[in-house]
Image (cartoon, rainbow, N blue to C red; front, side, top):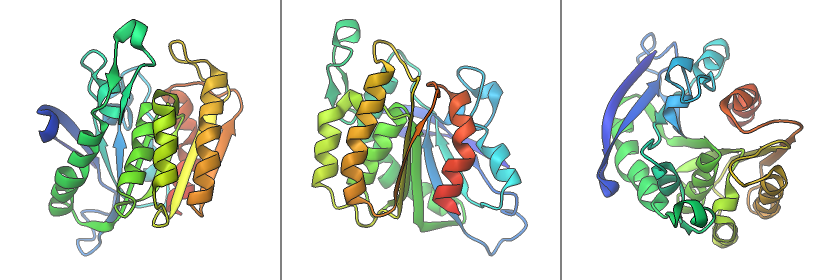
Length: 252
C-alpha cells in the first residue's frame, strides 16, 4: 500500500513529495509496529512510471514477496537544475567547478530536517518503531546516507550506501568517519560497480573512492559489508538487481 504527501524542507524553504510504502499487514494487524527505512530519490524507488529514467528499484515488489516487514519513506530529490547535488552534498565541492561552479553544501540542513521534522511526523502518523530507523541511498544518496550515519549514529542504526559518489566530498567524508563514534551502527552495507561512470568521473575513481571509505569504515563499524560488483553500471536497473542482497543483509 502506498501513501504520499507534500512536506516543506523548512531549513531550505522547499516543498517536496514524500512517498510511503506500508507493508501488507499494516492495516490487518493494528497492534503491530514497524521499523522505518528512509531513502533518497523517492521517485525512483517503487514504480517505473514515476522513475526519472523509466526504471525503478522495485523495492515494493521485492518486499511484497519477502518476509521482511518495514515502512519505507522515500523523499523525492530536487529536480531543479543541479539542486540535487546541493542537497545531497554535505560540504561545498569544486568537482564540477568548470561546468557548474561550486556545488553542494546543503546536506546538513537536509539531514537535520529528516531527523528533527520528518521523522517525528512519520513516527506520529504511522505505527513505527522509532528506535529502529535506517537510511539508504545511491550515488549522491549514498554520500548523504553515510554523512547521516556519522552525524546521527543513534538515529540511523542500519545504512546502505549504494554506488556512492564519495568523490564529491572525498576528504571531508573520510575525515568525518575517522572522527565519528559509530559504535551504535548495527549494520553498514556499501558497494560499487566496476563499470560505473558519470560525467567526467570514471569507473576507476568510483572504485578507489569507495575502497578508501571502506578501509576506514570497517575499523569503525563491527558489521560492515563491502561488495565490488563486476560489470555493474550506474543506474536504477543495476541497483534493482541488488535490492534482495541489500535488504536481506540489513533486515534479515
